[in-house]
Length: 487
Image 1 (cartoon, rainbow, N blue to C red):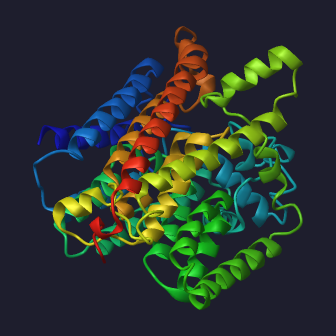
Image 2: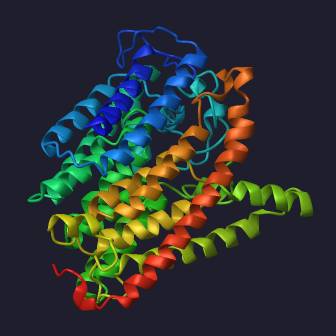
């Protein structure tokens, strides 16, 4: 019960950070004060609010890890209602944890002004009340998919010259996507309270997802909602939703490998899903114009400070000079992703049990509670996304939300533990949200924590994941196919 208390307290701290108003964790939102979202405008000190963020992350991670293994069995409907209520409340508070929503508002504003956000940066209109409010990446074109840009443009139409109202319009969509995902996961596990409870912990009341996706208001939430919906329906509807999700963020397309694997022995059904998804993606990206993938291409060559590849980058630069690392890191990350994906898929048991998960623990929670396996699509999708997250040169903590949603469908306790540890470590490396307001005496949180401690810790976690997956894969292969539960 204490574990669930820690989960609730972490979520409450996240709400408090937004309620206090502009700070080192909460960007200021220009616009009339009577426009939502609202706050107390208390302007808390940087040290205090950064400490609150750190406590929310650590307490949330510890509480979540313990709650996933707790013997206490609260009613899953109560968890569902509580998580949805928190997500709804956060829509009325200023976003916290990053300043990305200011970029979203700027890109939507560019569309409403007749400009192409894939070719024009917010910095080209510094005097505009919305594009001029961008704090980071003002000189960068949009990296988001056309569906995300369409939502941003609609929000801009609602908000007009008010950044505050524009952000609120996007926050309503974000909250709807978060709650919609929660409802889909709850319905997917219907008939089994244990699985519903686990799904709620991994998504709906997950304090780390509340911190990053409900409070942080990232476009990832919308992509996740589409992908979860795609895995809970069949046929052309699944393909359409996969295509829309890819239209939000291109890398969400990894999820499509799950249905592709599951339908590989049904060529007709696979053709329907793949054909619909492909046609949807082509249509969406074609409408966006010739520059829609420009920034995606540039972003694929970037290395974020908190990933292990930053250590490789520094080493290569010291040996061969600036700019010499890009191709090597891209190749290395693809090879690592392929290796991790293969190992994790072996660990899932789907390679040795005629496509039925559960032989080695991929459906461990299901087996423990007597539920039927979820099917191979969520398992394969989760394996691919986790492999990508651990191998990617550029990764931010809110990217992990996709893995948590997929794990809620797949029910894979061992892999859940790796993801909880990863998102806690990575989240601590990205405190505070606003770099310019970091106190000088906390510079070590960037130079020591983000650039050194986090990369080395994630490297160790990646090695541990590979070691665990290799051992679990050997056990799965030795186990006869007849030992796996049948749907």
